[in-house]
Amino acid sequence: QFQLPPHVIRTAAATVRRRLPYEDLDAAQLAWRAGLEEARIGMDELGRRIEPQAAWGDLVLHDRQTGVLREIVAHVRQRATVHQEWGFAGTLRRGLGVTALFAGGSGTGKTLAAEVMAKELGLDLFIVDLSQVVSKYIGETEKNLRRVFDAAERGGALLLFDEADALFGKRSEVKDSHDRYANLEVSYLLMRMEAYRGLAILTTNMKKALDTAFLRRIRFVVDFPFPAEHERAEIWRRVLPSQAPVKGIDADLLAQLTVAGGSIRNIALSGAFLAAEEGDRLQMRHMLAAARTEYQKLERSLTPGEVRGWV
Image 1 (tube, rainbow, N blue to C red):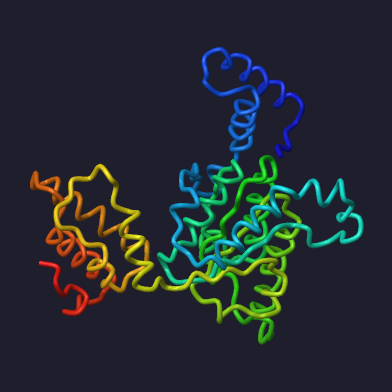
Image 2: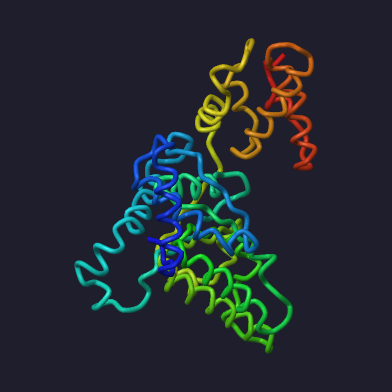
């Protein structure tokens, strides 16, 4: 998994030997952790690292989407077996990297799904904001992308390229030299993703804006739909900790709010802080105040139907 030079492997092994008598983990688990720590060097300045905590139970998705996510994990986990031991690398040669596109609105669970997969694979999740990588200067975007992929190769981290719309678009029709160069930038990104031995994921809020020629080069496309009311109720149930002191909290009433999972988490947390500040149990009136704040941020207005029966 870790492509590290011999002297770094020796250093990591020495670290494992030192830690072994004092840790609850066995040698293999400590070695994996040491490999991760060495592989992180040079990555932190290129993206935002998340040490994954979320598990499959934290995802509220259709079985169809969850099935595809588990299939992607299998492709990463069994890559050495299929490519090398079974010889597929020799017959296919190109496009062996595991690439995916997560498409859906803000807060629908794209980043959470990537975190769950990273946790399952025992890898770090690095979020790279493509809008920060893309440069107006010719040649700079490729240089930035090259630094990201070269550093990530050390540990095969899960790379999540956020805001793919900053680079992608219906650009196959070349009208001027900038369009032609934008096509080269996209082609370079896809080429590096296809050659990457980890998992590279693109996220987009606007799948329809992406050119179908680019989509064909992505191995998996997973849609993250806006959650239905019963799914929102389930997200509410999972986001409220069992030890939180609550009074009269009704997940079905809360699910009347037409917001995605990201906003549900914001409202639940803000409501909890309001209740804690009052020295009271968490109640629907705290959720109502938190919902008003969240809706202001979203530049929307709460409708009477969304909060009917709350207080």
